[in-house]
Amino acid sequence: MKRPELKQALGRLLGPGEEEVGCDECFELLDEYVEHEVAGRDADAAVPGLRAHLAGCPACREEHESLRALVGGEQAL
Amino acid sequence: MTAATVERAVETPVDLQAPTLDTESREWVAGLRAEDPAAVARLHALLVRAARFEVARRRPTLPHLRGNELDEIALEAADDALMSVLRRLGDFRGASRFTTWAYKFALLEAAVKLRKRAWQGREVPLEPETWNLFTSSGLEPDAEAEQGELLSALQRAIAEALTPHQRKVLVALALNGVPIDVLAERLSTTRGALYKTLHDARRKLRTYLEETGLPLESWLEEDR
Image 1 (cartoon, rainbow over the protein chains, first blue to last red):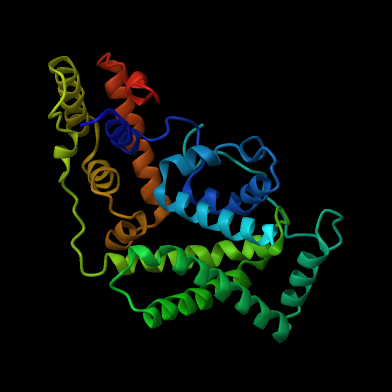
Image 2: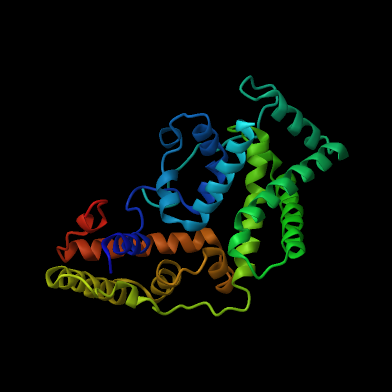
């Protein structure tokens, strides 16, 4: 197995290894986090623990990407 | 601090007079609190747009679904999201614009329905199917030995450090790529509960592997 693939596989198994919120908290905080991101502010400082959760949870990550794309696309209009 | 333990202060429902609340959000909340049919219809239209946006993003991964089936899913997701938004209107804290807050309900509903549809009728594998992902063919002998040692330690950690439930959840989600909403439905639980189990399992694995003396962080570093 090549190292980037191994790193990915290990990352899925071992998770982010940082303090993180759970899925329910992630959903509660996602809109706030995305608005900080889209406005160019430090979302990680404003909403601690969410970035790590997005790294460890593919479902929440996909929903974060969608919300950011939707809100970011609107703001770009 | 662990998963699900980052605590936030309990918020009270948004004050419509709060200076931080933008005018548009204030109008949305006032109209919906008053159960104004026009406001509810506008909200539904907004949620349909968000659900269709999500369906369009995922369309390439769902080639077996026809356009009308996908639109039915989007409309169903928007209907469910409308119910959720109206039921949880008191939870809106004004930490974002109202529309951003509402969008996430439609995106979640659409994403969950599409994940479940993609796995409809498929068996959910709960045993390791992908150890071969870790095979170390084509490597230099030293690297192959190093990876082999890591793989053995991982297999031992999964077998010895985890409870049967943790093992099942970790294997399904992290090794076999089962979407968390699909597994939650099959095991009659929730995404949040499953992620907590996954988080605890991951922490046990890390502890086990660190105790074996493996240079775990160096394996996880970017440029190794």
